[in-house]
Length: 114
Length: 116
Image (cartoon, rainbow over all chains, first blue to last red; front, side, top):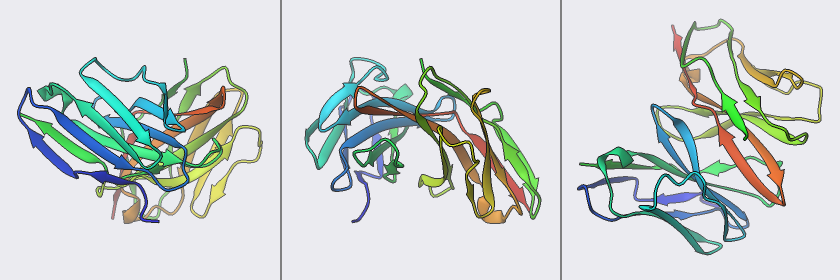
C-alpha cells in the first residue's frame, strides 16, 4: 500500500477563495482523522470519521470548515471562504479498526492564504 | 476533556548524550494507549514508541524508552545515545476508545535539536 495520500502537497490561494484538501486513507482502515498543525497550537484534531461517519467535529474552528467522507477511500476538507489565519499544514491520518494501533499520516498539505 | 501537555517547547542535546522529553495527560478513561511520534524536517509523522495503559512495564524500542507513571498521568520519552538524525519535533499522543470510536489527541510538541 502507498500509505495515506494527500493532495495537493502545497496550496497557495487568495483570501476569500474556496480551498479543498483531499485524502485517500490506507485500504482497510476505518478511522480517518483530519489535523491542523501550526506553531502556536501544534496538532489540533479537527474532525474524525469512523466507517465514513463523522463522529466528532468539535475541533472544526468555524462554519467555514467542512469535511466529508463519501466512501471508505476518500475524504475532503473544505474551507470556504479561506482567510489568512487558516494558513497551516493540514494532515490526514488513518488507522485500523482497533484503537490499539498507530495512526498513519499523509505527507500533509501546506496551505498558504494570502 | 482529554488533554495532552508537553511543557518543553524546545530541547537540545549533544550527540551521544541522553535526553528526556516530558509529557503529561489528563483523562478519566482507564484503558488507553500513549504514543510518541517524531516529525523530522520532511514533515512526515513517524511512530517512535507506544505504551498500553494496562501494562506496567515501560516500553522500549532500541535507543528509545518511556517512563510511564499512570497514577501521575506522566509519559516521558528518553532518547539514549542521541544521534544527529534524532533532530525533529516530537509529539506525545493519546488515544482512547469511547462508544466504539477512537480519538487520537496530540500535545503541542517539543522541538529537539541534536548538536555534534
